[in-house]
Picture 1: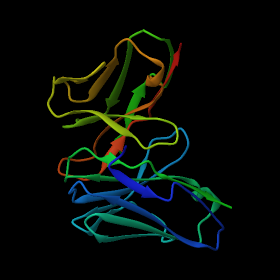
Picture 2: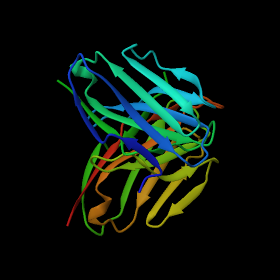
Picture 3: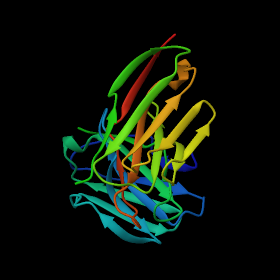
Picture 4: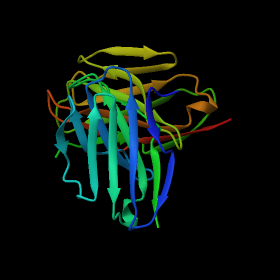
Length: 112
Length: 112
């Protein structure tokens, strides 16, 4: 069982919908991450939060909006997504810089 | 930019055989991580390496941090069917960073 919990496991949404992905960890990690992964490809970094502040935004389109309400929670708000945004969205956390990242099982997102 | 190339891209092996795979970079890394990803799940951390020349084992898995600091190797001894999956190496993009770069992946298939 992973110590990083992501909900929902699967999400199907239309291009005009608004939805949110949620991630939670209780390992005391101070860095949290969002990755996007396409089939048979490595994870691609989207956002990093460090001590609840946005530290890295890898030029992600504004239709993806991250939020870190507290050190244990990370959300990804979705609005007006495109079909090419269909992918596995992975959340991860780490103790700090240069520390191994621990991943959740992801949310499989399909855009109709 | 930095890239991590993994070899082989995929491999079929017989159950009971030993497996070797590697990860190479054009630049120096000070940390190497090895992950395994099963279908429909997030990557799971297998081994973390922090020092050139370091050799670390985790059960039937052994990983080495290359002396040049530009490569790393993962060996699996006496493979079993549950070793099937994609193996990713990863390393920090820069020292003192939260950003990790993932390798292209090695897909392992075990024939019973």
